[in-house]
Image (cartoon, rainbow, N blue to C red; front, side, top):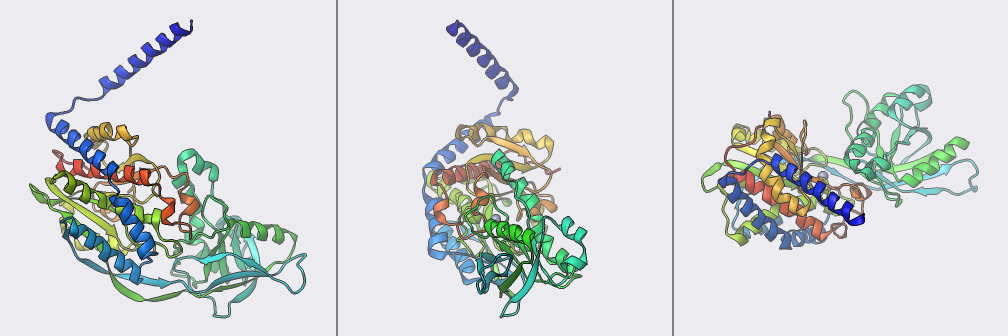
Length: 478
Ligand SMILES: [Zn+2]
């Protein structure tokens, strides 16, 4: 009986496999050549430790790479030097970038129900990127706790005026655990972006959000905010999950007052640059395939997951092609975008300065979703172009990275500017279940990157870029 059912299962499975294979189209001789080369590239990248070594240098030797800092510019120089050693042609591309610097950041409870007389309670806080400062000596004010922007608006100006608004916003951890971490982030991050200006509209003096992240290690998460133009700018920070929970509990019991000091500064814009290096095409050097990550990072950690990993995974193709002695037909352009985190100026300058060449940009790939296991790619290409990628799926399936998902919007922040100009854009699709534990925190450091996962990301990016740089025809965006 047992054997009979095993045989039956086997027959069913092999029929299933047959029908799957029949659905797969035939590959042309040219595609078969490319598939063999992609497999070679994949194998070499999976065995290389170049990306991992570069990442260690970016994170440990150079450190945090906040836009406008000397470290951010030094990282560009380091990337250029490493790629020049591999024979790449450096393209100099400068632009003005914002220069925001973090100052002191402290918060403490100074009054609450049941407090021990004469004491205060320290809170762990970080300024949101772009925040204005409190006075040097800080501010003291009553807090008002709200669950959302809508909740705050319902309270009205009378209950918000003169207060520090505490946003008890929620990151859907269950959603993140079920494989939708980026959707969970997208929902939770709204209050970080708009909360301060919405509170200022009602007369608040400062805002503090619950950190947008998926773990409770009493670590605050920073991230950019956007001030509306028509209201005064007020200081904005993020508290840890634990501290917001404490305040929520105390505020239900009675009056809570908090002292907050944030002294960041926005200095005049400074000149900076993108990291750009080309592997020139042998047949169509004017046609370009971009493979990229962003070279700037927040200043709290050392930008390993966000997004040193993306930059080094993009750089890997330079070492791999040199090792194998392969030269692409079209130009493969490695880019480390400057200023993704607080302005996107590097990408915007590229889209502006190279606008006349967009017709020759075959596609732009970016990895900026952590360094978890490579699942595949998200593609902003026309439905009719998806079939062109069947050879890529077949090769990447061997490492578990064969998922290709079509999207209707750009799958990466920096390549979004190219998407608007009609360039097909492709984002690395990573397992993001743990990403938001560390994202934008002091804990985004080199040790969080798993070497094997990084190699898999680098291999998948390199194989895809090789295919795009050598395929017959090209994908369409619409
Ligand atoms: Zn990023």
